[in-house]
Image: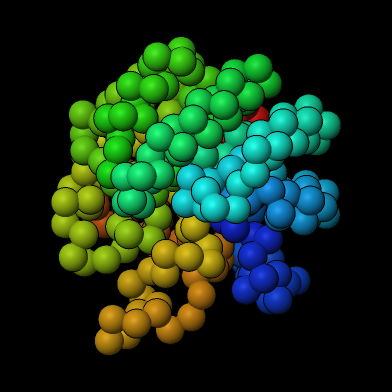
Length: 259
């Protein structure tokens, strides 16, 4: 049984396809979904959705990409909802240095506030990190974050992977690894310890190679496509398909404190 450790299940493109899409997930051995948050406006929708099925797991947070949608009182709201609804993680949070430098300080302030909520609630993190792994690692160490979590769509190097692993984090392996051109990323995921890896789709985002033609995405990504990520890992690594499936699921369960 596979665990999609990052799926925006509340997105309208996915919700419009239920319940058939969930049936497709189960038929493809995808039995659990982690649903990360992005903006406060969607929190209640995600909370309600997570109550519909015991294998749809809630995370709450404020995504750095949407700084223009976050208000001053959203952090206090987040703290209250975390206490009330007991999500399994705080996320999707982090830093995105792909965005203009003028936003970086504000992003960092928001991240630090959410790190404190996670520490207080003793919850793992779902991290979004682009072009700033070293900075995020420094902040995690300074804030003494030792509850771990998942680095979504990890694209860093081996040294950064080691740094995250030392802090209890797992590394998300998703659609990017399905592309033939992703040679550096494929080499990395071939060599890292299997105990560090978890599977994800980021559905409906990050379409996989089989969904593209002439450089264009042909359809939205779906959590039922998670086996494509597994199949690529099987071609890269020495372990069997069954062992990779079992260990990546166990890794996800462990980091989310399910076992």
